[in-house]
Length: 306
Ligand code: CAA
Ligand code: NAD
Image 1 (tube, helix red, strand yellow):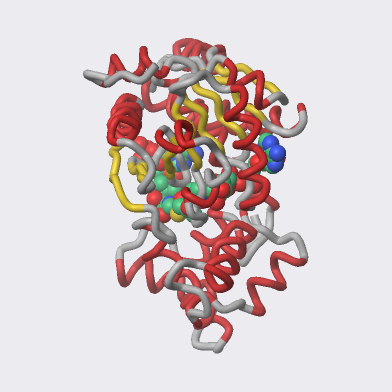
Image 2: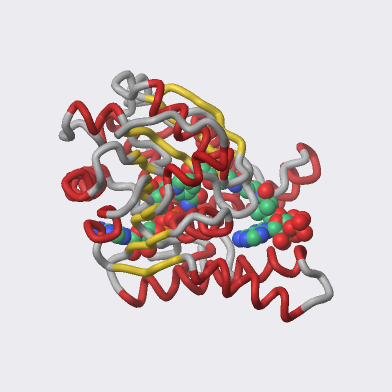
């Protein structure tokens, strides 16, 4: 059953339970924010260990939020963290999680085949009328959903969050040609209901933010490779000379170097209008770091050590 949500509160009530597939830095952040805004959430990952990591990420981040909310009251801080976490169930079964969800958000690693397989299972399990959404950074939404039924495609969209999810206000709502207006409206209402600001855009590579950010990141890496300056000086230059909160190498490490490599390799190979574009050609430095498992903050080492 498809219906319009008159307000954010109505969106909250209508979406009800949210299933988040993938409990890494993005999935855990999305689960946290949805639970903070009173949604019951099921967070899904491949193992109990991965789920525990996701839970630890949420607990740490909620602790920061709680400190600001209740500056002089450690007990209230603890109660807030526990209350939000009590709304997040952990599961290793995507089908079980989707079975009772009004909205399913996928945030697994940036791999088209994996995402397509996951959505085939989710489409079989989710209630009719549920919104299915991907948090992909760079893959075409229409390609992720290409094997689904026409009815599912109408309610399939991109919901692209930004890292760190609890802090970044924007969510890109990505509409395919097949999505209906109602699904977009419902997604916009959900985004507003969790305290974020939606930007609706077309299903093109990188949507808005990454289409502008990735050329900047890659050109920064090339500056380093050409020996123009050190990573530290390039970072200092962009923070102090252009007012960016993080320098490009800090940001690359923060996003995850594997994710950046997935994005640029995909676009260079087959991005619509971008295939062969030298901006996204492989970088020896980036390839070497990823090959050695230095993926940035999440592994303790990337361009910098943490
Ligand atoms: N959870 C909760 N709160 C957090 C947080 C987290 N994980 N991380 C930071 N914060 C909060 C802090 O508590 C602090 O709050 P107040 O200002 O209210 O006290 C605030 O954020 C600032 O944090 P810090 O003082 O610790 O550090 P900072 O000033 O350097 O800010 C930052 C951290 C918000 C991450 C900032 O550096 C920043 O905006 N960096 C750029 C991030 C960015 O560009 N993200 C987009 C990446 S691209 C992407 O996500 C898309 C993709 O597909 C790849
Ligand atoms: P991550 O590596 O931190 O997390 C990915 C998670 O997916 C891991 O916990 C992994 O165990 C889990 N996973 C892998 N296969 C799975 C499966 N079959 N079922 C369930 N879980 C599975 O990655 P991330 O940074 O959270 O990125 C996730 C997605 O979000 C990617 O599509 C990425 O492009 C996108 N994204 C990333 C950022 C960013 O800044 N890192 C920003 C916006 C969007």
